[in-house]
Image 1 (cartoon, chains in turn green, cyan):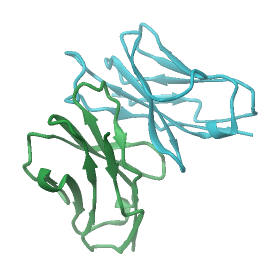
Image 2: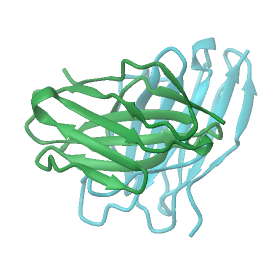
Image 3: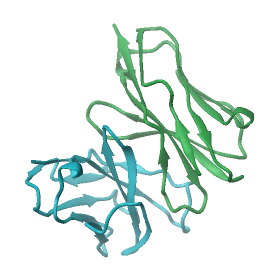
Image 4: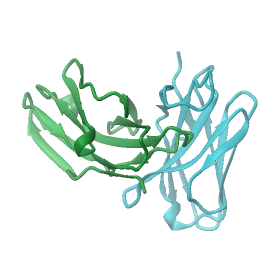
Amino acid sequence: AQKVTQAQTEISVVEKEDVTLDCVYETRDTTYYLFWYKQPPSGELVFLIRRNSFDEQNEISGRYSWNFQKSTSSFNFTITASQVVDSAVYFCALAKVDSNYQLIWGAGTKLIIKP
Amino acid sequence: KAGVTQTPRYLIKTRGQQVTLSCSPISGHRSVSWYQQTPGQGLQFLFEYFSETQRNKGNFPGRFSGRQFSNSRSEMNVSTLELGDSALYLCASSLETSGPSFTDTQYFGPGTRLTVL
């Protein structure tokens, strides 16, 4: 069975601190996709990144970076120099290649950035 | 380019009633997916439509149904509402020019918040 675990329910940091959101997944498939989405208070899910199972390169996009490690089945997300606007709920999700968009979602991590 | 729009944004119904939610995808997008989000169950996949056909369905009872029109707009219907149907219903669209693929990003709408009393 496929499963995504985001063990951190809520994280609170002071602005400008770095913060890492953990994501651990379970799947028996060799080909799959991993995603991170951000959900601000407005409710709309915002796509952040997609990574396929064959691409273990870490990625950096501005203050955001992602660390994908198949050996530990983890796909962690780090925000460097956090800002108040980063406050949101962040979701990690997993999908099989042939599952026609049936994403398996983690429970989400609520990130609070204090000024 | 306009994003995914969902109407209405908020809805209050009573148990036993039925409700229809609407989703207009980004222009040119052909795939529409629906998700239910609740505090207890989190985000759960409802179904996905492509070219007016339901291609995939999550584990929800038959009270939950949907359809897609020729212009890719989609509606979902919930009949005989129960208290547990109170949730944020999210719609997502993707371009999908060459068949099912996660290389197409899903873009989400703001959701419809349904409250069942």
